[in-house]
Length: 326
Image 1 (tube, helix red, strand yellow):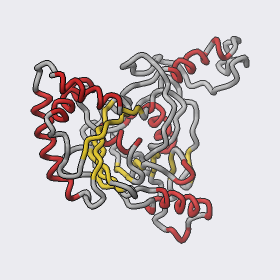
Image 2 (tube, rainbow, N blue to C red):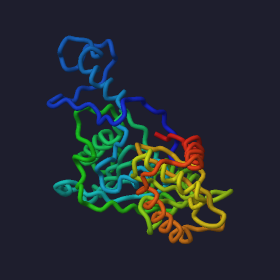
Image 3 (spheres, rainbow, N blue to C red):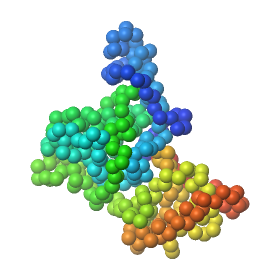
Image 4 (cartoon, rainbow, N blue to C red):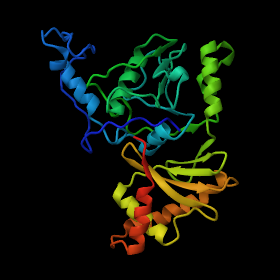
């Protein structure tokens, strides 16, 4: 799982500052003259928009993208995975492919490979409250970078494009989960010592993870003490917690013998219920129980009756065990 990042507080549901026609101005010290040539200090000129962009948190940065739940899972929960991305208007000349990756060597934000293909890292720290805009800026720079070079992070322009502007909305989003990070170096014999060392460290820390096929955005993972199922759900949080409470109070919130719904994460505006599983229960054995749970959940979500006292207590327990990742 990616490390927890500090939150940036902002009004719920904001979509980030966007000023039509504003040019990209380099970031300088707050009291230095603004690089735009206005004669004012940076903090009183373009620094004002930059500060606003940093402070304003987009609650659901991947909203509107195909596979929003999987974007969240790959950002916060899955160690090693890749997804082929489809750009609006097709690939530029000299770029054979664009691939989203959970992590890249040395935590590079992006990499333009020797063959011209692009890898975009998802689990990096980003400079503003709009993760989608930060990733889009990195992607655009990677597409224009010289082959064989990584792309460094930078302050993102508050009026720049977002992923929703660059990616084809109708394209499939199909994550491939890997046991390790060998996808970094197709030709491992030619990897630099730094990349080889980074690969070794990353593989040692990777938790075995499998994406379920029977339901959307659900990931089984193996840990030394017990296994888990972590399921990113797109339902509105309050409605989902009510439905989970109804099932929990009725004794139907588990995924079978020895399993237990233990709480949830909140990540990028979505709720991620978590189940403890026996160490003997593998991903394949989760498929049928997960599909059956999805049917029970759909029925509970359709109910609009007030919660009973038992259901309210169950909901309180679930809420108290909720952890916010981002």
